[in-house]
Image 1 (cartoon, rainbow, N blue to C red):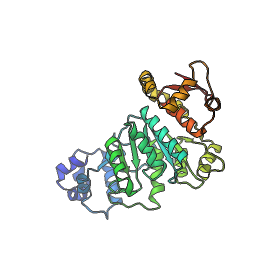
Image 2: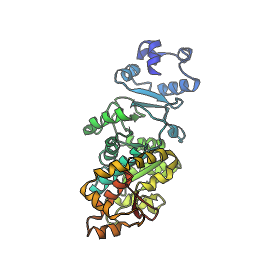
Image 3: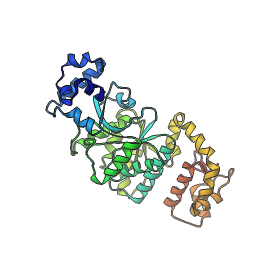
Image 4: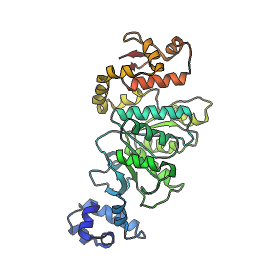
Length: 349
């Protein structure tokens, strides 16, 4: 849309100063798109008239809520942004899951974020998060590690790398997915913009997974937005004395779905990932020969017809760190090498 308008008005200033009649006369905007643009211009009348030029030079795209590229589920929310700025490519065909959590991530949270994001991305699900430190960063990286698609929603302009250390990560995200914001280019983050962007993260997705959250974590704001929009909320349980898990445990207490493995999420969206799951199973034979030593030990204990619980696996391994073994089981299940039933008993596939 922006490029075509520049062809007509030649400069960003020309677009910014054009009357409603002149814009309508281009036949490039539907009535709804025109109204969205005019309202956006009224709300940002003090912004430089060179905005379209800035976007064009920095490869920033605009999408209005009446465009086909606009996130479908976000459009259904109570207060969707009239216009989104983004870098990269918006995908409206894949289901999306938000993954959020604390900035101060524990080794447990890091392992969970990496496993779930890579596993879901492998099955064709887009991972949406906020590019902050901690769970957000690990969730984006997990999806990218398997060549999956991930989208980052920022509390600043899409041309602002925040946190600065994630500049390279944001570039990688825009190559595989999209970096998105409702804020004008150049907008710096504030304590108010982050909670506001959380409604977009939740609104874009079918469900929100809270990986690790303290009692007052901002991730709980995202979960609250998801609940208000009647979307699914999932939470990873943690120790009752672990400060970083209090928020997750309380969400579960209040009705969020307790998640122990990736199957607890994908069971809610089986229609969307059926083909991907079948494809993963077809690759089993090749993957069985690339197991690590620890994975081989677990695999050798299992049979196709005698399910074992996590406790039984730990016992037969003569001990071991339960969290590490659970992590390995999750990795094997994601790769389609083993599977678990509703009672969380494991067998070979």
